[in-house]
Image (cartoon, rainbow, N blue to C red; front, side, top):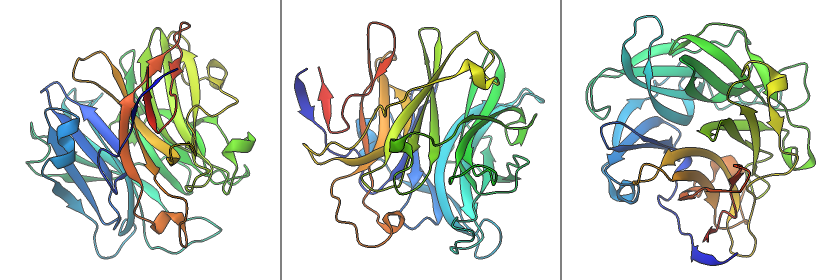
Length: 325
């Protein structure tokens, strides 16, 4: 394996990065901003140009209320409403009523906003309210994907009956902001590398290739212990059946001490400019000496690199620090 390029951040101080390539030929980017106070979007014709693209603040948190603090992990999707048949832009995000921690957890719930304009950096964003999973506990990191004509919601949430901070859940959607059925748990923290600092499965992201559906996710504390895992299922199985899913016992992306890239995680997938290459988008740190809680440290940067595939059709994530031949 030859190192062809040591990576540098695409965008600094943007955690939980999400890049979506739309049919209009533009890339759309959003992420958690260090102040955790708003939703920021930018767009460009290439991934590289996102680094210098104009930023537009499309939604600000209110001063008080249930979603007035800690705006985390926004994702932008262009989803079709299963009921009306109309498509629109949606941003899914998590927010809390305060910065206080209760029962060892923050108080986040999940929310959605909608925009029907062709360009989501323009037009009006409508607050659609809470995306209620039916479980009244800490939850965050929602993503959506469509499979065989069904829109699915995929997220992380605390179950009071299960040890740890969050597990991964899936449910079909009635509308792009409402679930159609009860949540199904797909994964919980269980391996040693998933329970370092915190017992966490979070930040799911979906990519489909070669007859399989892959779900990447992140685990452990958000310092250098943060790492990524992988679930996968045959595309013809029932994605709502936990037995359909396989789980890697080892992390697929973890800290690279050799080149100084630490705690890679909370990724998304997009397509390269060629329309074929799957690009891995993730955040990581470039140092480990963090003062205080890592969540308040702004230096989680956005990185992007091509995802590779082995002879069996499984994704090869490599190291977070380099592009590998």
